[in-house]
Length: 73
Image 1 (cartoon, one colour):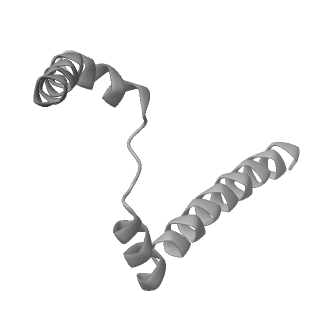
Image 2: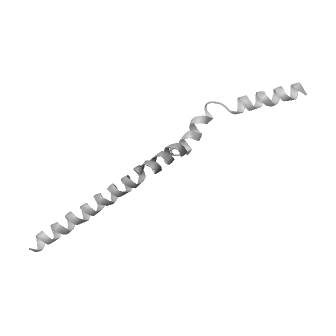
Image 3: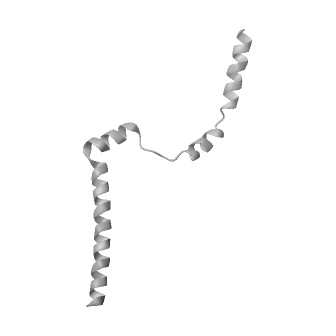
């Protein structure tokens, strides 16, 4: 029984080599941790980022409309 457990441990140790770990890391995109997501949610960082992105988009549209109106006049 001990030999069987030793063989299983050895097989698991050789199956999980360091060469396989980078491949698994490359497959998953980096995502913020749960704690980081919670902190950003509580502090409002996510909402602020979304608000700034929307404001930048509105400013770009407004500038484009102003350029179009300047061309007409």
